[in-house]
Length: 398
Image (cartoon, rainbow, N blue to C red; front, side, top):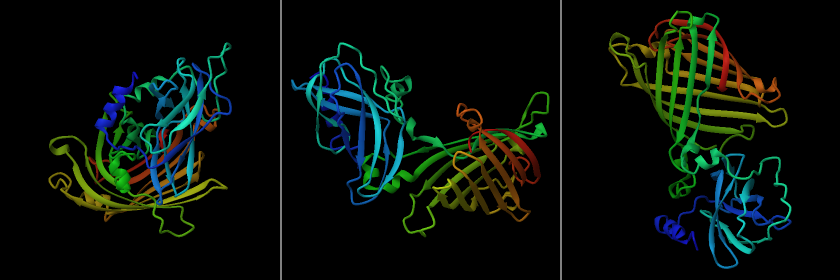
């Protein structure tokens, strides 16, 4: 009963908590696994609810195991394929593989269930240790090793890291005029746990995110390589799930709305800052046969608390409407255009990206990026100026 106090503590602190609306079922291996050896578990996650579920399939599972002598053990099963977000209609299921190391002292007929999920106990026979070490079980989606990786162990202490994901493009591009080089990084953070009690009761809560984007303009032509300007853009936004009420030809219809602050972090006459709220519908179509897709996303902006001392007329150069269009083939060439419509004139940026991994035997996971910009207010500092630049570089997120 070595884990029993821990289990009682879990029940006391989290009474009635279930980490997912799904019901998991383990496909029992054809041959009984042996004590002390790794085993590959194939787990079906079923949506037995009457409504569609937007859930996260975790990278790690905890198994509550009761042995033939009544001893309760807590085991961890890890997936090498990482966390997965799924949307399941009623009756649908998804399969995920997990690696489990069976303790040497565990054998005989055991009962187990997956902690945090509502599901029945299952039975599994564990045979005695083999005299000849068995070859670890593998499949096309997972690898079984002697133990968990460092990343898997760190995930036990960085429980919220899975909430981070890519947001806007992340890239580094050098201008044909090196003085007009540029880089950007961006990420978002999901605020509500999809498996939490609030999200299960109110699934729309999982759409709330915090985000941060930083765009820097780097003068690589000068001796000291100074940064000409940097825009810091923290943001709070909400992204809806895919609306069911859409035409049959439309694969995706989402609405994003949020509030963003943007400033260049400088003082005095060089200070620039603004705030705006926006509404951004997102329309997507995708052909599974050709793997060609397109996304069209207009955005409507409303400025507030703009810094009137240093950039009172920013909206005249940035505008109140912009349009993003993406066209491309999955894991291949993609063209992205961003167009802004403003009183002082239109602005646009074109990005062409291609996965370098396709040229190097799928060994290097970055994109080759070509960017052309002809825009007013590309940077906050010189927002009244039009910048024309051709840039070439790499992207991590496109």
